[in-house]
Image 1 (tube, helix red, strand yellow):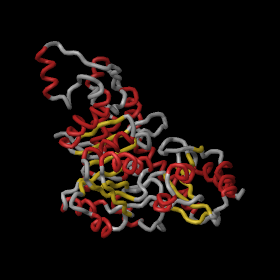
Image 2 (cartoon, helix red, strand yellow):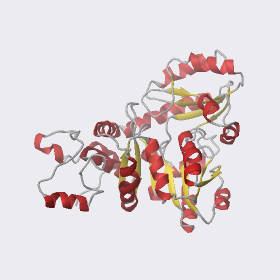
Image 3 (tube, one colour):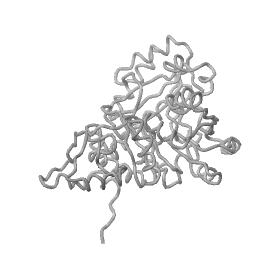
Image 4 (spheres, helix red, strand yellow):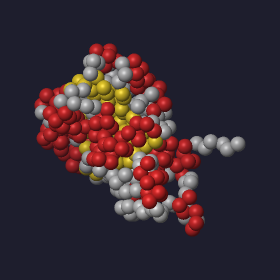
Length: 395
């Protein structure tokens, strides 16, 4: 009887049939655009199972397929598809469930580009109606359901304000009303949160974040049942053409092998920093689900087994000059968007929001000038703390 391994072991050990002839410990990169066949019959057979066959790399590629199987197993899903970006995965996942005139429910402070997809594309071009909710009020979600509601799109925790949704309760409501559920699980990763066993229909990841972990790839993933993923593979995935390259898939495979230990380090560093900032006089408030003071800490512990390296806090000043001085004085924290890499980053949401969103949208998302989001990397935690202290001392 074969013992089932822990998923961490399976991430490291490859069932590498392609490399067995040479004893290759890492699967080869199939850097080709197409695949040839020995006969009419062989090619015909491949087309009969097109969503699983390797015919043309815009559809399937052995290197990419190998990584897709790893990610599906990690998330406890039946199947997954990899995309050229997180937004390609988000867009394909939402488009799969929505048609012209349908209604969906999502959060007020979802990922900015996802918000833009709904407001700037799906509403004017497809007539899709969207109701925005806080995410932490079950009754608000219930009351937002309409006869034409087809999808509830979640992001838990959200990537700026870290609002957590009660996944199991929302899934229960959705299933009673025959509504699909999609969740962006990039913040927690499947290491700390497995949403598919909770009943979610489709899990989305920006693999550019923690799954990639080295700030050297742009990729996205959808994970779900075989039926849903095959349906997406034959439509949105193939026809929109947002295909992940074999080379980037190989980099993602490399990263998955260390995901467990990286997430543990991100978490321990972040908790150390968060506990310091929580007590600092120049910090107005701090948001980190791992803190006991976090207003949804109990729910976070219920549905997550750990916490990532993302922290949000608000400086205790509205003086833009002082805010910029703090921001620019940081030395180890590099300034930039995104998160989840080996390096620590700082980002001020107001920088992009002021240019991309209306005042009403900014207020709806609850963003202020002093809001900061830091992505805690893998550096020594004391060095990171010293960098924050010296910058705070200047304001």
